[in-house]
Image 1 (tube, rainbow, N blue to C red):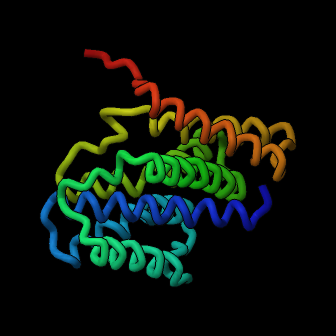
Image 2 (cartoon, rainbow, N blue to C red):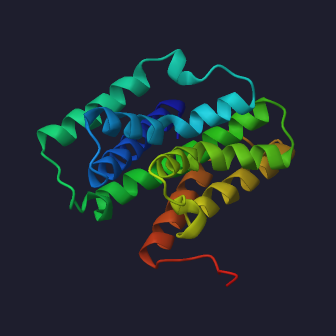
Length: 204
């Protein structure tokens, strides 16, 4: 997986995350501004949280790409007249795209943490926040308990990838080949968890 393919993976994930925000906004009967804000934050909130935590200028302030990607999704949803009862989130095209984004953002967050000189826990936290932060912001804005805290195996993938990348870093094993393998493993793990409805155990 070269850098260009990884960038494409991030774009695919951003589009899927933005679509998730659009669908949530439509279900909550928000106006077009509310839908756009929800879509934008779902797609970019994790990256913003990550950058603020390491005192780095957020990418949304130096690049117009996030704005254009969100605009494409919102306009596309309007042209296709997506309604409140849409089942797009349950189609395999969406699930795969969302999973690509989850894995790509997890890897990105981990690498940013390593570049910033963080310890193991810091790297893992950045992996988790980059991948799931947007969804957390989305759910908090609509007054819901974040999905990542109550269901699915979603956030666990980001944590596992963060741990794996830090271990690779300790052994000087971070390169395109190992990241490609991790990307494939993370994607397969996420899709398998979705298919078989894996859940973490609950205490109650």
